[in-house]
Length: 455
Ligand SMILES: Cc1cc2nc3c(=O)[nH]c(=O)nc-3n(C[C@H](O)[C@H](O)[C@H](O)COP(=O)(O)OP(=O)(O)OC[C@H]3O[C@@H](n4cnc5c(N)ncnc54)[C@H](O)[C@@H]3O)c2cc1C
Image 1 (tube, rainbow, N blue to C red):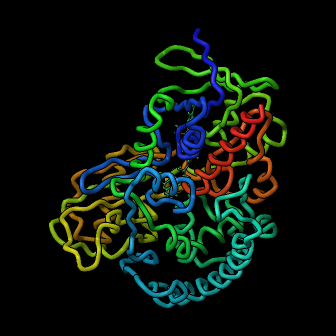
Image 2 (image 1 turned 135 degrees about the vertical axis):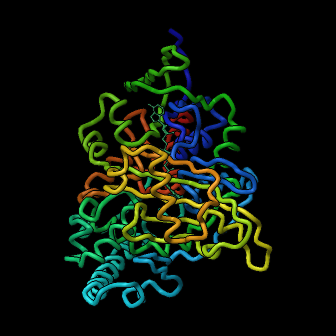
Image 3 (image 1 turned 60 degrees about the horizontal axis):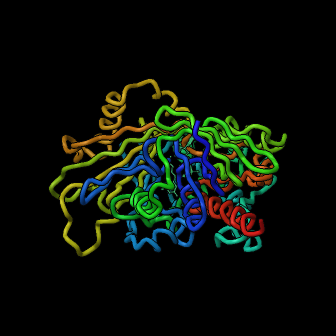
């Protein structure tokens, strides 16, 4: 059996692992990825001049490592200017205006309106607590610097569920809240109050910040990194076991039907928490407990290419929250291409997705059945889409999104902490988005570099 030696091995070729390998590319580093492609939950396909994506669509922060890498690689960035605070409910598309006006504009019963106002006030108060913590410059995480991953939260809100924070809801408002949280693959009673208040409360504020993408899709960043790093990024190489000791780490993997063993000075684990937990032996008790506590929900997503010849009613919209249909979000992926004053080019691309219990309920359906179900609902919302979808790509993510369950903050420090020669990166380590995730890879790489230089 072949035994290789390297200074550093990165396990997992999502953006966390890629950012780590990129930051160590002047050293003796190799990245092992199980699948035949790199990118993990960044997964897009070009359909010139459009693109499809079943993973991340916006760069999670231009000042983050992934944003900086895109800059360094000379990739063009474009901005979505379309509306984000748009909701479809009971046959009505409510668009524009402030979120606070929605209790009066959505098609709700009187009881529903009162319930939404009450829940909205509770949410606003909780979100104020959340913002006080995450906007605190002392935490520094938003500047993507520092030596550790910072993911602060409000301890009081962390101790309860988001359902507790919202209080008793009218069924119509329950549907609205479910739609808002299913996009992060959880239900209101599964996630902590801190997580829910930040995900829903920041929806429009964050959406306004996260609007930059790359023409061709975020897979362009992955392809450009891969072109620069060449054969140091090894695909089709699933890692089975990682054993660490005081003098080094042994990585056991398979490649082309052969077992391979790599001896490394340091290893960066950049796989989702349950996979990391399964692969690594000899973890300390609190680290193992922290990895066990990370929760993910499922996602089902469909990306579709459309062949319209003229304008569509969603040209000025980027995102629509869809209440009580087979998916919870609709996206007009090509909104960044539609610029005021410029001619509207033919064709486009749209996305819909759902998560949590709704995705679980659809999990056993065939891709064709899911496509038909989603297309029928898209057509109800936008009848102009009838007969114009020329390609549809359905994808399922088992580990869609790591959400924070109540009590998450008790584990935060252990999640980010290295164990001897092992370092940990990934979206579960801090905040789940490509920006903070790439930052977790950079932090791990920085620590490995320091250790190598000291040695
Ligand atoms: C549908 C969807 C939309 C999203 N939209 C956005 C967005 O617009 N903006 C944003 O910033 N974020 C978005 N996100 C979140 C973002 O995509 C993720 O937070 C981020 O990509 C996760 O990166 P990661 O490297 O931690 O994990 P992953 O991307 O999951 O990478 C882990 C890698 O490890 C590999 N692996 C697993 N097991 C093994 C093994 N045994 N051996 C070797 N390799 C292994 C996997 O194949 C995978 O490639 C979205 C996520 C989803 C699912």
